[in-house]
Image 1 (cartoon, protein in one colour):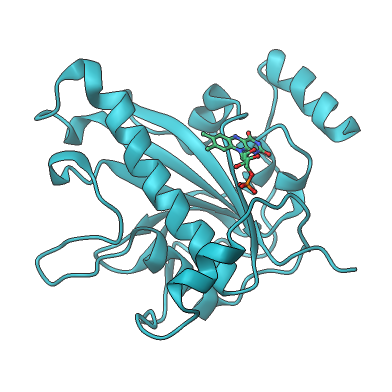
Image 2: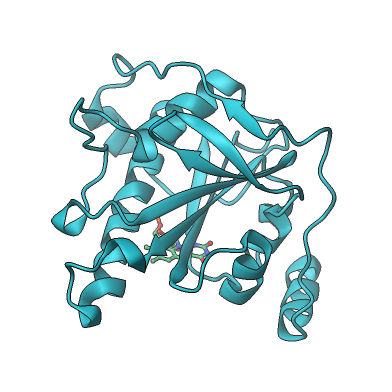
Length: 216
Ligand SMILES: Cc1cc2nc3c(=O)[nH]c(=O)nc-3n(C[C@H](O)[C@H](O)[C@H](O)COP(=O)(O)O)c2cc1C
């Protein structure tokens, strides 16, 4: 809680800053091919779905991260469809992954992570203290430039629906793989935007922490 209060104060002063990376931040992290089959039956995963806010620090192995990102927002059809819906198929959500070794954009076409910031941004992705140490904080950003077919007044709500669908994919993946997760709206959108450096018409919507459950 003291960390949360400190971060709230820093946020108010506009000084919630990233930390240095752990290790060398690779420009691209090639993800292994996702295992798009098997896993826990859907009804069992739904029965286990819940928010959890206690995480171990252990990093997620690359194959697990690969499956997670594919489940979240990967391409699941040859013509380019994805695992979550979007209004008019605008596919306006960008998923960023804040990892100890850097902040990355998930490239669904290449099924890879592309470095966007050579810094550990986890701390900046929310006020709650667990976001600093959990191994992965996802950030969902809407790119309004892809929503020109959607009436202006509906863009934010439609993008939030799409981000929510991605978040539920992550919840179900977490439930099916013994991971903890929580979607978070209590975030400093300006601090995240400054750290990620999105374009003018990209909008930070939500963040989601994922990791192994805290031990004991
Ligand atoms: C839009 C939205 C925003 C949320 N923001 C936060 C948040 O900032 N921090 C947090 O700890 N939980 C957050 N939650 C998680 C809810 O607290 C949680 O889903 C709710 O208590 C129900 O618990 P359950 O997910 O285990 O069913 C959010 C959930 C939603 C849908």
